[in-house]
Length: 267
Image (spheres, rainbow, N blue to C red):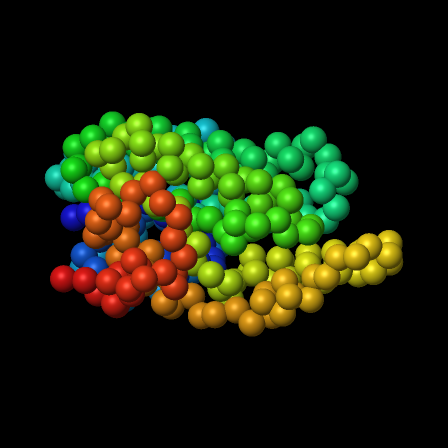
């Protein structure tokens, strides 16, 4: 069976993608910080008897967590004759938020380690396994903040800009693998609630400082999130069936190129 690694897998988009993947005969390695939430995911996954869920608890910035993921892949390849089909780099931090120059060095470092360094390290560790699969996929989950500046979200947006660039760079250097930057939209998740709170706080900050910054559009967008169902179905299908012509590019769930992947299942 195909093996798919999903980081940030215990809630929100990561959890929903895992469940979408498990509807197919797939082995999902779900990594996240919260052991309790991973145990809850295991309970939900038990309904899919033709698939397998392996959970790994730990911070993705910790080298030992990434090593545990790689060891799980190695064991599966040795014992079951499977192949590593995809890596979905979903784990990310939206914080720190607020005025761009107010953040500590530690906050900047923590966010860049989570959103950039850890995904790149995990990609590098997966490369020996991907070399055995001519249709392997790396799906990097990105954000609309990578397309334009959003006041209060400078550090987060900068990491997503970097992730988009690295996706394109990887595609140019490793053409045998499909690297895709995917924006799932404003989805109803705990992270979206965190972003909404941050946007509202920045709006109040701008008003109190007399700054000519209008956050109303951002707040309204975050107040109207979509269900995770459609974008996560697309993500699952991309992980398993993405065409190589998509590699190196940025896509949103609404793009025309995503229409073939919007079906619940692709045969």
